[in-house]
Amino acid sequence: MSRIESVKDALLSLGIQESSELFYNPDYDLLIAHETSPELTGAARGVMTESGAVAVDTGIFTGRSPRDKYIVRDDLTRDTVWWADSGLGRNDNKPLSTEIWADLKALVAGQLSGKKLYVVDAWCGASPATRQGVRFVTEVAWQAHFVKNMFIAPSAEELAEFTPDFVVLNGAGCTNDKWQEQGLNSENFVAFNLSEKIQLIGGTWYGGEMKKGLFSVMNYLLPQQGIASMHCSANRGEAGDVALFFGLSGTGKTTLSTDPLRQLIGDDEHGWDDDGVFNFEGGCYAKTINLDPQAEPEIYRAIRRNALLENVVVRADGSVDYADGSKTENTRVSYPLSHIENIVKPVSRAGHPSKVIFLAADAFGVLTPVSRLTT
Image (cartoon, rainbow, N blue to C red; front, side):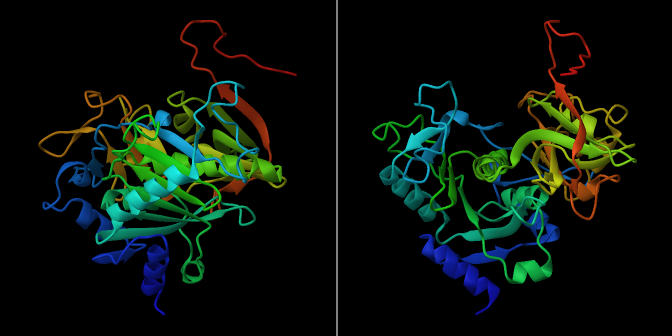
């Protein structure tokens, strides 16, 4: 059986009927040609910019939708997830019944059935001991481009034997009209079944739902193995010293870790095991609002062919106005790690950190500009 036929059989087992065309781990040239096709409309279509990067709009969602996040509560997760209804503090882990899950799964499978599909197999995690093989399925070319940028590409040998540990079914084009009777937040949904090892996406086109979705999965799996799962960037100095940068979105993790004098490990999601720090991802996802080539030259130079811009304003001549936040302040670009010159390679991992930096971005002056914690 050919690899394509094997993938089609796997999709059929998920309820996705025969696709009109299937592109398996497509290269950048194909994805760029498809996502900029003049036949496309709306959020499905990208435009070429003067840098060679493609720019797309993500529709009404220009960021993640945490209020529409659900996890199936079953025998596996009942006592292993911090639930939003547990009374132990606020979080976004809202429980979902297996019955509603089945409805949402059928809805997404129906959306993807009979369509031209893009299937990307990739690794989440640079540690072979704990990495997850992930299969992304989408009908939108630029969403396949996004995950190709953001996750770790298997070698040809690994791809030939690839069996996914987790599947992401992105049905961005469908919405759930039963949401009110089901007691959900809206017609949009980002749902996880950790027993079936599937993520479903409906109603939101935002690419970051796939990226952060897998981060949620790693946050669930790794701590149970005694491994830290961290929202931080990381880099390594010439002497081998490793630094971690923790902070909320927009506090400078990507900017500070992309230091020309230090090797970049990764800009956002990492694990910390007995051997040291390892990246979950194969790319970076940088904010571009007010991007300045003088202040952030490495990120600016990374915006070239194969990079994917989100929600930026593109002028008629193909140039990008990075100062224009009229669509959103959360303008972004994804690009593969190879677009940064000084990186840890061939594998994005290093030793134990000797410096841990918390980026508070304190706008109220409660903290001093730099505080050193000694104990």
